[in-house]
Each structure stands twice: as structure tokens, then as C-alpha cells.
Amino acid sequence: MNDEIGFDRFGLHPDVLDGLAAMGFRKPSPVQQQAIPLILDGRDLIACAQTGTGKTAAFVLPLIDHLIDLDDRHLSALILTPTRELALQIDQQIEGLSYYSPISSIPIYGGGDGALWDQQHKALRQGADLVVATPGRLWSFMATGNFQFDRLRYLILDEADRMLDMGFLEDIMRIVARLPKERQTLMFSATMPDRIRQLASSILRDPAQVSIAVSRPADKIEQMALQVMDDRKLEVLLALLAEFPFRSALIFCSSKDKVKQLHQTLRKSGVMNEAFHSDLEQQVREEIMRGFKAGRLPVLVGTDVLSRGIDVDNIDLVINYDVPPDPEDYVHRIGRTGRAERNGRSITIVNPMDLRRWKRIEELVGRALPWTERPLCGWIGSVPKSESRGSSGGKGGRKPSYKKRSK
Ligand code: AMP
Image (cartoon, rainbow, N blue to C red):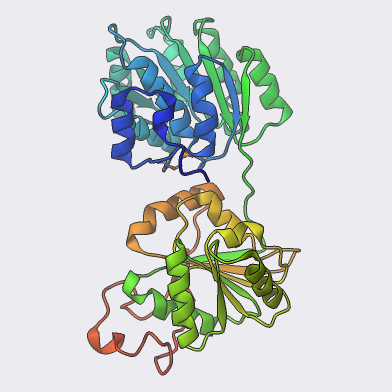
């Protein structure tokens, strides 16, 4: 990942940059890096990107940027999305990113009672810059003929493959037929089967293409997570290494300094391990890797350098001592286990500050991952003094037993 690339290189309006800062987005994700300049240039776009890649902001940011200085505010952009949850999420992201801009949006989605219908009807009549809608509900409103989209300039189809899977093609085509032909159209889809390409060729004009390949973790990897406060991480790590049998294990930390520190601490606790990071000479790295491959060295502690360049088939345990900031790194890290059709296990230690990152990982992986919980209280809270003393070595302490929370 290139740390030098920031959002400022896109020439976005200062109010948009303020919105980004308020949301805590510091560096554009790959889909944002590729899509934002094309959208700002006015190109139609077809983008292959999954949830979790930052695709929403990839289209929301240029939209806000385009609309921010309009004197005459009217309905300018329509975002079609398959579900109520996505409509609400996109609307929330618009609200966050346009916090310092005069942009308004309304979510329109099905379900609910008559009161929700009335409320959405009223909101549509009052108007907004952007409408985020599920196709079925929007068409129900449009069919009454009351709503004008004649000044619309942007149409976005989000999760197009899922909308087709849900049977929205007809509604989409009816809606599109009522929109101005002179517009910019963007289509995002996690997959690109033929029917998506056909839809694209019927509603996009000479689209630019962006494709973000993300490999999902192999099914053979058992993934779990533990909520642990920082002051108990080491203790938990030692307990995990004692609890789960392994031949070869990788432990990932977020920085070189942490790797070096953890390597020493584990060594003092009797865990045979080596540190692996970019400060090491190539020759030393190769030597460590040979020992690990041969099974002479059971544990490697490393940064993400380890997740990209390691080619070892029999790793049975991956522990994320820290949650990676980039969800794709999670996929790379845990992909080191469960290779060659073998079973593998990955355990991620999540502190309360990392919960948001963890949520993004779940979005990328496409499902909620199970929490593993210790039946004793105390992992999450601060450590009682009597228990913390001497327990970090993991020796002599109670051996924990873990049980999976039933879903
Ligand atoms: P999406 O793929 O659009 O559903 O985004 C997944 C998550 O990533 C959302 O929670 C966003 O708030 C977050 N996100 C999107 N772009 C960035 C970024 N550049 N930096 C940090 N978080 C981001």
C-alpha cells in the first residue's frame, strides 16, 4: 500500500476533504484511487468491486464534489441499491461525507407501514440533491407520475448483480426509461456475469472499467475472534498457543516495533519464535524462512511483509495480534493457512478500538465471523492486580477453556 497517496491529489473541494477527515478516511482505497478521477472527469464507469472495498465513497465523493457549488439545488443524482440496509448505509455515508456541504439526500426503501410510505412520499416531494433507493419502492412512487427526474445528471447502480438476483431488472429498466438520456451513469457490481455486461451496454456510454480483485478466504479456514483489552493481549496469546495444537503458526502485529517486542517477550516465555520484518537482511530472512518451512521453527512473528511473500503450505494457525487496518490485508494474512486444501484456523484479537476495523473485515469477507468467548469474565475489562501479576508468562496461570458463542 502506498502511504503517499492521499485524498488531496484528486482536487476535491475543501469541504469534501473536511468531511473525509471527520469520517477518519485518510487514504483512498484501491477502488477509490482508480474510480474517483474517472468519475470526476465525467466518464461513465463500470466497476467490479465488492462490499468492504470502499466502493460507496468512490462514487459518493465525486458526486458531492460536483453538486457542492450548484446555485440551484434540485434532484441531481439517483443511487439504486438492492436492500433497505444498503440504502440506509449509503445515505449515512453521504450524510457523513457531506457534513460540511449543503448536500441533502433521502433514502427510499420498501417495507414498513403506511406511515413510512407517507414520510418517504413527503420527502420525495420536498426534494433533495440525492435519492438513494431500492428499485421496487422507487418505481411504486414514480409510477404515480408525481415525481420529476428531468434534471437528473447522475445515475448509480450499486451492487448491480445483487439487484438482478433479486429480480429488479424490470423495475430498473422502467426507472431508467424515465431519466434524462444526457447523464453520467456508474455501475458497481461484485461480479461481472454476461447479464451484467448486457445491462451495462444498454445503459452506459463508452464506460471506463475498473476492477478490484479481492480474493475471499478459503472455506477451509476456521475464522474466529476474541475481544481483548490491550493489557491482556499477551496473556491471551500465550493461552491460545497452549490451547490450539499447531505445527507452524504465524502471529501478525501492526508494526515492526511491536513485532520485535513480542518476539522477545514470547522468547522469554519459552515460545520458540523468530521475528520477520523489513529491517532484516535478505539473507537472515531466508534463513528464518528455511527453518520455518522445515518445521524446526514453530512460530514466526511478523508484519504484513510476512503475509505477502511467504510460500509455506503447512501453516495451521494464524493469529492476528492486532487487527489489520486494511481489510484486504486480513484476507492475505489468514490466506497463509488453509492452503492446498488443508484445514486452517485463524484467530484475531480485537480490542474495543478495533471494532470498526473488524466490521469492515466482516463486510469484505461477506459474513459475520464468530466471537470466541472465554467463560470467565475479565478478558475484556481491566485486569485485577492480583491476577495480572505473574500471569503474563502464561505459566502457572489457569489454563483457559474457550467456547464458541452459539449464533
Ligand atoms: P463499502 O465497501 O463502501 O461498503 O465500505 C466499507 C467500509 O469502509 C465502510 O465502513 C466505510 O466507511 C469504510 N471506508 C471506505 N473508504 C474508506 C477509506 N478510504 N478509509 C477508511 N475507511 C473507509
